[in-house]
Image 1 (tube, rainbow, N blue to C red):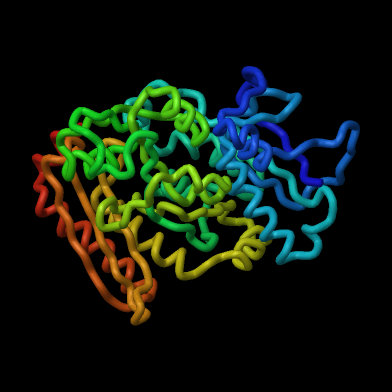
Image 2: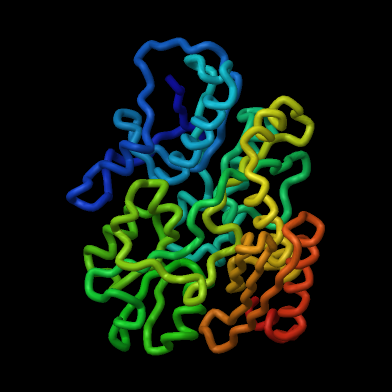
Length: 367
């Protein structure tokens, strides 16, 4: 059995048990993501402590505010156990839930409370302090520059990068009547929605997958968009009304990719992680993050990018930079060899092109 514990600044447990999945699947996603701890069990010292974000809301049922993050930690655990026999033994792997600022403050846009690092800083601190051995992240939440002393040598195989449109009243964005309200905390989604459908209204809409689906059902908004990868990892993809093509909604940088970090001086963990790394995904993520780095992207800058191996085995890349209201959209594309040096150069070159097209005044207006 894998031990699950919560680590926070004050070691406190918050709230009461609740499940916010759809009524006909009540409890499904949370149960899938939760792990029971045997009463009185004394597991041996863990060989690997996996850190992931979340917030336990009850020490009785271990109901979590971030079931998707825990599902990703479980995927990592299962792959490690399958690849290394010593990790398959009871107590060899421990999952440590770390409360992050981003999980605690849900009533404000991310840009107003500090940006992407809100979902990774506390986990990075735990890694550097030796409280965990590896950290599992959604790559789209990882800041462009990693903290000194950490390395991210592993990406698991990428899930579907597309966004899902979810509504109880329309089959697509195009079918939503003028004035309809779409809930999204993503400026990338907001800008692309308003670029194509300026008659719609987009409002801040945060919370985990279950919370956003509940708010949609309660009528807070007419529609929302969620990453299809997250729905698939929670076995909740049937909630999608339709799946948007990458032509209609270009994904976030590294969307659908899981990254696993460790300390840069921890050779043993790097050896474990190298056995899990999916090189095609790692190279695609590097390409997209180089594009993001050139644009100095943060949560106030709508940026989208997608790199993938095409049918000829080459890298195809598309990048987008936009204003939050969708009034300005700059796009570019590239194609070249599917190799690290070529893809890093491709991402950088595309970023410089869009930065020049937009001009310095564009970025000043986003501050």
